[in-house]
Amino acid sequence: MSDKLKAIAIYLPQYHPIRENDKWWGKGFTEWTNVVKSKPRFKNHYQPHLPADLGFYDLRLEEIRIEQAKLAKKYGLHGFCYYHYWFNGKRMLERPFEEVFKSGKPNFPFMLCWANENWTGTWDGGNNKILLKQNYSKEDDLAHIKYLIKYFKDDRYIKVKGKPVFIIYRPILFPNLNRTIEIWRKEVKKAGFPDLYLGYSQNSEYSAFPENTSFDFAFNFQPSFTNVPIKTKNNIILRLLKKISKKIISNRKKIRVFDYEEYASLQMKNTLGKNVFPGITPMWDNSARKTNSFVLHNSTPTKYGIWLKYLLDNYKVDVNDDNFLFINAWNEWAEGNHLEPCKRWGLEYLKVTKNLITNFNK
Image (cartoon, rainbow, N blue to C red; front, top):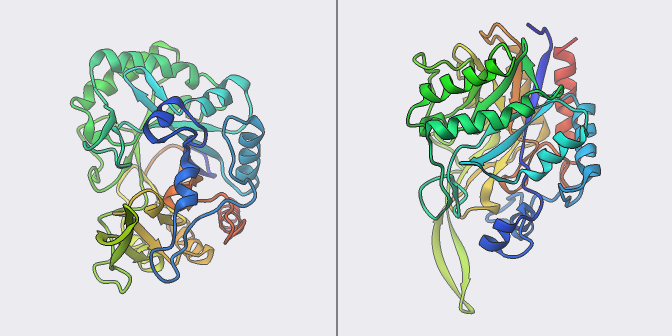
């Protein structure tokens, strides 16, 4: 077991044009398209979130990926957890990670999290406006794990006692999860590893650690969209204006707004279960993507630091392996959820992260 805390930032590899997004959203679409068109919806609403130090980058550029890793390492992060997209052999947004893997640069630890939900036009992984559907089978389970093994063999891939760490984003969607896990563990062992160190993101739809499955760990995915303050002055219904056929009409849309400090205080009352690593979000606001959005309002580096310090002061995870903490996210700009420097806060969120984690690891 490592005595040092390893802070892992979740990483979105979306910031480059791909053929599918050109078809679905228009030529040249990337996550930045949503980011720059966002506007404030109420008084003192922090929108748009605009990047500072790294600018509106293109993840096809090696120099950007190297700068991201340098920044993350400088400010106390141990590695990235890249979202991995697999649809029965079809990959999506794979180029940035593939180039990291093939080039050997940056020399920065990583793991993968399979975002195993439908790819939709509503940005929610649900069953409406499906663009790419997830289909599960024994054959696909086998093909998938065989595909992943080459990444697991990379020296940069994060392992626990020689076991590569792999995360499932939504385990509830599997028709036969135990069968999938059995196939994966068998193939990983055949490839020469002692086993797979398998985890999942714990959220409202899959909250309890399942004793009847062979997961090794979970991490507390933040934010929770159900464990929210019951009463808050910022929980409001807003009337949004929408321009249609050159006429302005009133269109009632729901936006859930919670004060970040109130929300964080509620999360600090939670007791993490056995084998569950803590998670935190520096801020959250997905109104750049969705009209029916979820906003943690009035986040500041200081308030984030209070929550992070609480997690570290009370870090008693009952996992007999490495110590992980998951930060969501490194660069989810259209969800207003990023450690990367923005125009408003610059490096302040990163500085708080480094200070607290460095002190913890002394």
